Image 1 (tube, rainbow, N blue to C red):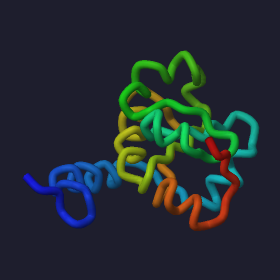
Image 2 (image 1 turned 135 degrees about the horizontal axis):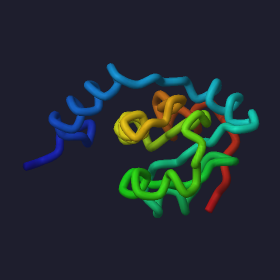
Image 3 (image 1 turned 45 degrees about the horizontal axis):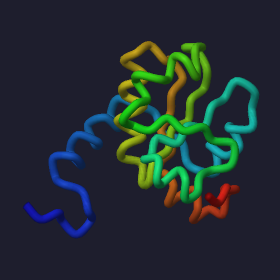
Image 4 (image 1 turned 60 degrees about the vertical axis):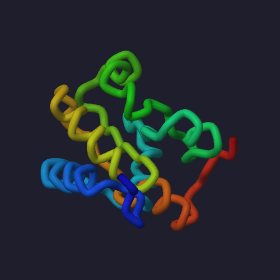
Length: 127
């Protein structure tokens, strides 16, 4: 099956849109500001290769594939503010939904993800 022009299958997009109805989102500029506050974690949920190439300054890496397994060791406070981003806001929406189901009460997805972050000229670290 060929991927549609946007690169995401219809089922994946539907799943993400449904998740967005159950989570909170924040824009990239606000996420950048909030990430400076104590007790806030900016979490890159992209793949290791994406993280290695470049990522938001101050972010930690917990890819979508392992976040549920590893988050409690990295962020044991279930009230901590967690701001997740991915490439375009799809995987981060799914990650935030999982975090909420695990009991994290202040998890947010960065709307537009990495693309929105870089388009806004926010600080990055090059691999």
